[in-house]
Image 1 (cartoon, rainbow, N blue to C red):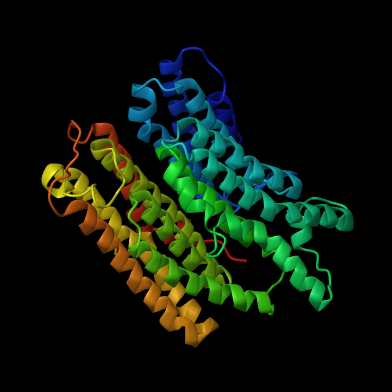
Image 2 (tube, one colour):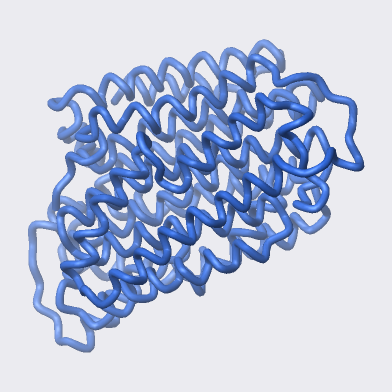
Length: 455
């Protein structure tokens, strides 16, 4: 763990040699990623308390590895738009490394105050990425949406954390999780709403998701990859951590959010059919997948928690790859419209092959780990309430439909009417997509790496 923090500190050191230091930061991030993979495969290292305010367990270890992995892929994906164009290269790589450091603090912190402030601090580099390297003038509005939604929902959580700290006399999450307090029923419901609101907005849950499509549409490819790959997982991670503090097994809020998660996934699947913007469609599909994860978490069963964690890891890899593919199509056509960006199967068959691979992974086809998470979720949903099993089946079917719609719309048909000069897919782009495809398919052979955490 200390090796990873040291590598990240080296990566955020400033330098005046922009191009050389881009690759140097990429090297340090790669070394940290290999250390995190070693930690993921070491059972003794994945359940340790590093210090008084830091710990790692089976929940945080897969997400730490995912954070390192996506950070490397963000730099590789941005070579054309940032490195080749010499678009503030040093600042961009510094922000990626800084964001990686903040996310590591979130996933390893056992101090609630540190957890909250690093959770909120992750918004700042993301906002700078959207404002500094976004494509459209509306990126300022998208940044304001993102900040208002997330900060407004999380401010009551800060007050609650300070109240808990004064009540327990400590900020330690480990101590609070092993101490029980009896609240009156109405106070318990209020505590549950305040505790979970910040994480439900970050997830995001349906009805508080409007900031996500706006942020994705205006963000550069690296911003979309970190939003879909890591920042949405902060919401799920926070939910699973807070379940240790607030018991909601018998709460009315639990049943309400369980149903809202499932029906919200169905509604967002229908919304996907009406999208004409490529990135907006992928963003709404992310809301649908996180709704499935939400249903698993609010089932309050060990299978549900394991399915939710595996869904977060699988979605982080798959959606990141889809956004990078959307960026490659945008570079060829300079449009994200589904009416214009089509016919890639005749022009660049290699990109069409990658589109097919990740669309079928996104619909939970074997052998991806998405399939494992949905297999775990079906009995969880059935035992929670047999009446909503039909909703789960409908959401799974609609997920396959809008992924097929995405593939056929973008790859079939005539050639794009406004096609810019292009080359075949570059080796670095192939490497990026292979680095997304291998983990999401290989993890099915050893699922205990991401399903070894029980509450």
